[in-house]
Image 1 (cartoon, rainbow, N blue to C red):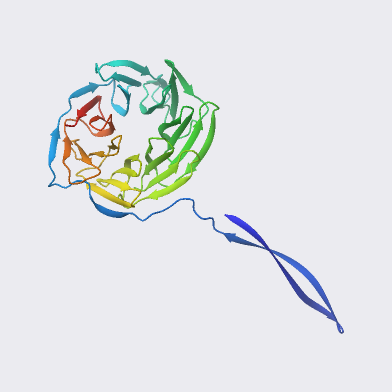
Image 2 (cartoon, rainbow, N blue to C red; image 1 turned 90 degrees about the vertical axis):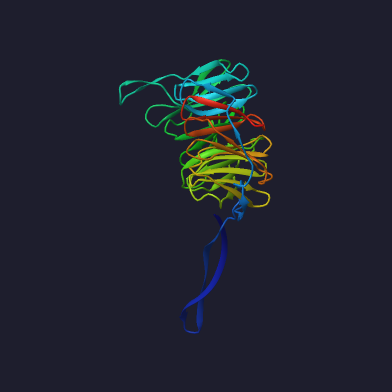
Length: 359
């Protein structure tokens, strides 16, 4: 709020003594409240049809390879010719995608649980990577989380953060800056070199669900319990746009590519927003859509489709084109990643990771 002080001078005549009047100058300070204009936009998105029609040609695809991690997989990351799998077995397993073997397993230290009075193996919930470092978010005592950096084959704990922070997801903005998604639907940028908070932005009262950075890492989209998506500048934490209209319930997963924003809903609606035209197209699934992804060039989108854990891959530029049905995942899907426009990896709440190649 901006406060503007205005000076009003009133001359009041009071008291009298015969034919003589006394005057007194009274200065009154009055504050006028002027509302700050929002720095963000709230465009009204309109529907622009469906992402997939049942009349379209549907090509069925089976996985060409199945990888087995050292625990139930919670997050996956693809870089160059390697796949990184975060597991509840207390490790990040690194697979070579030529030999399809685990070439490294980054072990996270166990911790003593005071309630059960025993050593516990942590669950790794979220991972990200730069050229030099891997950041790892894992469970700790109670609801606490711990952050680790893996660099030069050495694991270091990040100790400068408040242990009470309810961190859900972690991503690198640059080599020395982390972006943390908090359960309270806040974004926090943290400098790991100087061990200090850069900014902390509260987006809404809804609980946080997911976040995804743009390719150049200058923007991040955040999905939350309400189904509303927030577009934020990663440099300063400033809200840029509020994206809504398709999902009326929790947005489990989000993705962004240029002017396209993907959302996966608890209301069984997959959405693709176009920020240039302020329109969206939807996919009506048969089950909660727990995962989704956009291809590197944004020409394809993948969504979980049904209780059989199948994936539907559609063309984002032309909804009349053929779609692909990927079958074979064993449990509820929680992560999908495009390696390129044809190759996809998916993981679920078990130790198996599926690799697919579109025709």
